[in-house]
Length: 81
Image 1 (tube, rainbow, N blue to C red):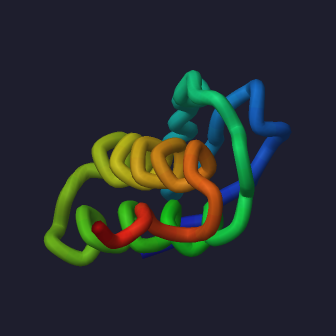
Image 2: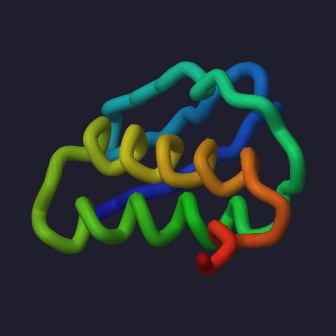
């Protein structure tokens, strides 16, 4: 499996290549409060789908959605009640 991820500026979304396939997804619109943990959140969301044999576009979207939720919080996770 030949996979290379290339991050672009936040507003443009993500691009990834798998062999000769180029996949691009738009950025998830969110209010950015704090970027702590955003990369880890993206990686966790991506790997969750990719490791289960999911499609590249599904894995990218899952990672982007999880990262967008992360940056909308202060810190890297929701406060415990």
